[in-house]
Length: 221
Ligand SMILES: *Cc1c(COP(=O)(O)O)cnc(C)c1O
Image (cartoon, rainbow, N blue to C red):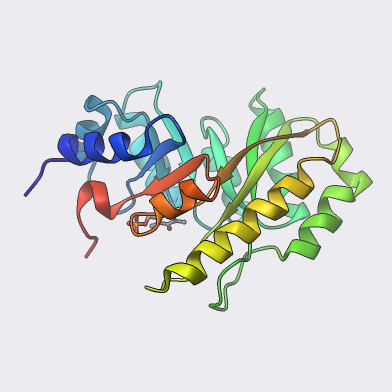
């Protein structure tokens, strides 16, 4: 079996300087996160608020924590003091709560909007039209302690490469379209797409952040 250090080195080599590697650490114990940190990976993704909030104080303070799973409004407060980027924003009401909690903590919190691109029925995602509507809404300008820095998407879980590529390409197109909108708190620079099975494809289609779990830590039980 290869080590976490070797896995990270191999993946980093494939990515080169084209995208940032987010190590997805959900369900993994703090000791393994420390190993990944020591191997040079300082961006970790968790999908459950409670798990992230428990692990955060046990690891170095310069680690950047990424919320990649559905975020309930009433849980924003637990991660607002430290979270680096929330990838999974799916509504204006969630943005409002993030804005409120960011202000309480004297911070500006960066967010991505999670877009529906897969064939599977998914909850907690925005359609392209909902996203256009949201970004054109004048209500956004009042939210001065958030920044929307891009989009996130999950491709269909399939071996059909052509389909996955098309889904990533569609998301990149939407990204390029929306990046032209000018608002004080929009600063598009990140497109979060690609996981263990499809990150190379995603990078070819324009990803700037890949979220990789099992290819680093082994499969989750
Ligand atoms: C679990 C998860 C990943 C990582 O999946 P792997 O296939 O283990 O790389 C990426 N993104 C999200 C949103 C996840 O929940």
